[in-house]
Length: 132
Image 1: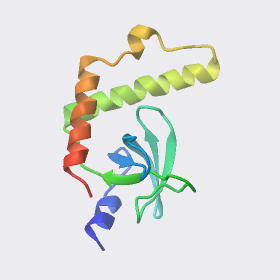
Image 2: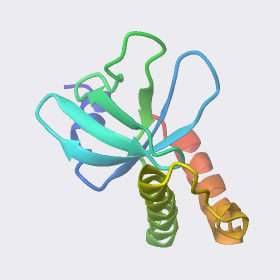
Image 3: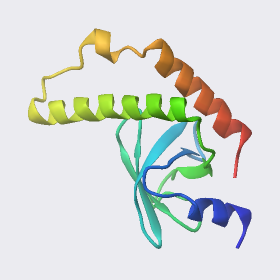
Image 4: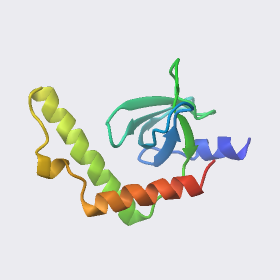
């Protein structure tokens, strides 16, 4: 088994990992929601979109421009907690919009805090410096 395959096999429910599509510059910080023998089902923290990845290759199971897992580096605990808070904030907003399509996250809550900005920048650098 290659180092990449071992790294992908190490992903467990609740872990965060990073991916990028081959075309474009999107940076995706994902939270593993379900991990099976063949797939990893995850939610992108910043958009709440859901993605299914092949657990052996780390490639998203879609036909065009799939996201590819490129890092499984673990963030420090304080950064992880900030990112989980950001995930909760965006998930709660999605639930509110499902109940009321006209609902919008208040502007003061929508803005990233200093800690959220710091966490996103740090985790971006962490993943860039620790590819698989």
